[in-house]
Amino acid sequence: MLFKNNNSSDISEDQIALIEYAQSRIKSKKRLFFHFSLMTIGIISLLISNLIFEFKKEIFLFDYPWSYWICSVWFILFLFHLFNVYVTNKFMGKEWEKKQMKKLVEKQQIKIADIKTELEKEARVIAESQLFSQNNPKNTVTLIAAASENNIIGKDNKLIWHLSDDLKHFKDLTKGHFVIMGRKTFESMPKALPNRTNVIITRKTDYKAENAIVVNSLEKALKVAENDDQPFIIGGGEIYKLSIDIADRVELTRVHTSIDGDTSFPEINLEKWQEVKREKRLKDEKNEYDFSFLRYDKIK
Ligand SMILES: NC(=O)c1ccc[n+]([C@@H]2O[C@H](COP(=O)([O-])OP(=O)(O)OC[C@H]3O[C@@H](n4cnc5c(N)ncnc54)[C@H](OP(=O)(O)O)[C@@H]3O)[C@@H](O)[C@H]2O)c1
Image (tube, rainbow, N blue to C red; front, side):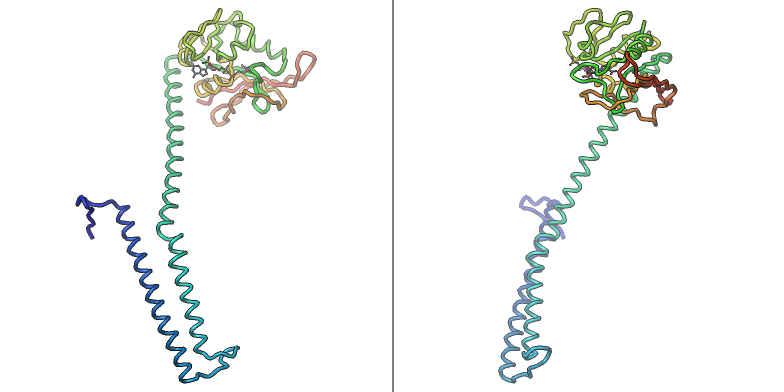
């Protein structure tokens, strides 16, 4: 059947569905009215026949003629029909199903959009990392951090432990190299780290720092450090998160305690990273906790 609206253009599928729904509602109401009329005539006829012919009582358990029983059952059936038309079909009929389906589809569409954004983000990071490693085939970008068992690395822009051997380990590894850090980590230190080239990442375009190079992105920081065979990314939480997917190595001091804090190190995904070194140290007067020096290399 072809449906046309006032402007004589074809009407939408939604409108057709609505018209079909309205037609089926009219039909079901007509059927209900027919049922009502038939029942009224039937019941009246039965009652009159009962008066005229005095049908026998004591059918079933009670002292009523069988015509009364037929009338009662018919009336109950009619009530059931009435309930079906006005309650079940109205609230849980096609329109209700359609609304539920629409809600479900909308939810799925939001989920799909989220997954798409996540995939696009990952694809961008992978492309950037591939581009970077093509330009710097011998360069080992290394994240260096100390994190508790629950991955906490700092609180109130401060370190949360004193581990003398870890500081020495940090100094030994990073000496002579570029150290790349977020603006907050830089400000948590008294001054730029000596014997290293300090690179600070900030979005502020007018940021000034003594004895340090200031850049506005991780890519620029890595570009500045491209001639270093092992530039180190030294934190904090935001910069670790930003760089873990493009790094080649993680030098992690795992501090064997669970602690409260507001900054964390990203979870190391063992499908992407392989532990290649582990060296345990016990706590003593210079080291507040037991800890282990771990090295992870990215699985190529
Ligand atoms: N345990 C460890 O090994 C270790 C190591 C280092 C730090 N920490 C701790 O970590 C905490 C600091 O970490 P955090 O996460 O708060 O800060 P953060 O990573 O040191 O620095 C964050 C800042 O970096 C800049 N930034 C971030 N993403 C950027 C981007 N995409 N482009 C340009 N600039 C960007 C922004 O600077 P602007 O706001 O200026 O734009 C941002 O505020 C402190 O508690 C510190 O003690 C611990």
